[in-house]
Image 1 (cartoon, rainbow, N blue to C red):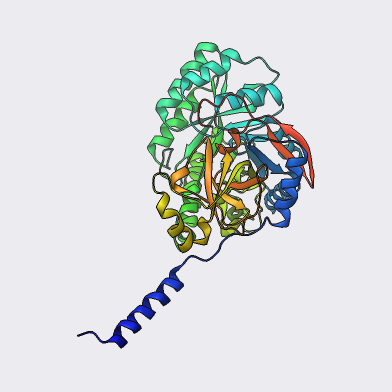
Image 2 (cartoon, rainbow, N blue to C red; image 1 turned 45 degrees about the vertical axis):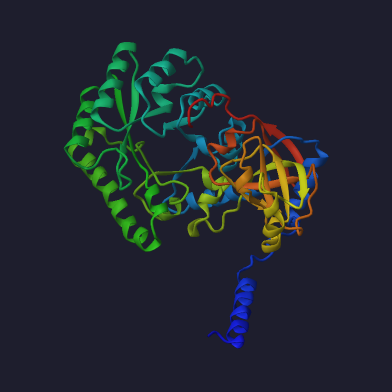
Length: 425
């Protein structure tokens, strides 16, 4: 028979476990930075979700990249347009970083750049279908000269032959950059007979093809544990070097001092400081620093882009649809379920940034009006803003129309994004 003492001790244990297990209050007020930004947006009369970019923070991030690329031997900085998909934003970054080099991943972006910034030097960042190349040449009319300012990225001899045939048919000369597989294993050349085949095709067709260099992207280093990345990095560089060696030993006629040996990306460009393997690095996302780039190597970079979504409803005593009776139980157990905020639109690739303690409510996930649960320590009101930090930059920055550029406590401009977003950039 269970004694009274045992029952009392057991009950006390349950109470203690319940107390320990109850979620703590995660809510709170805006940080001073976001309190100021909230006031700025409200004073500017903004009443729909916007993507805000802090120009002061952006300046510091640009300067960090520029400082890295001048470490001897210095390199060219190529701005990745898909990560900052606004012509004015690309122009702003380029001028501050003192570069005219860009990496472009999408035909409408290419068209926007060559028409708006005809002095650009452009490397295509992924192999484009031949139909896209045909369309580009058919529609191109600006002062931009593709024969000297554009590099098409090629990943197979088969694609190279497609481009050769197009060049012959329309009587143009194309600069072609060969994509290397330095370990990411999503296509591209390695230092073998297939690379030699492609270089041979280029060498035999100088009237229509010009070898412009190699591009080796090493983003896989970002997604693996640091101890594996440390072991993998020398292998990445050796794979790239093997291709350069094959080029110089077997195709010396294609070698010149103007070749573009492009490498790295936002999560890896610092690995090439003081290294003469590549002649240029590409980066874009680190300028915005979405959450996917919260990496040790980028710890000195700052988040510069935020979604600001107006609060349209604030409800005390949150309840569940069709389960009203559960409301008091849920709120009693978890202070962070004490109230509900509903924001204008939602369900973005983003995480709450300010005020703290707002969490997407599982019953109200919506692209129309996203619901967030919060404790009573969150005291923002209707027409205030919830601030979210994107998890990535390229797709998210295209979802809000004109980008809202702020400096200090002022909205200084609105910069349009590239309008054709039917395809992923």
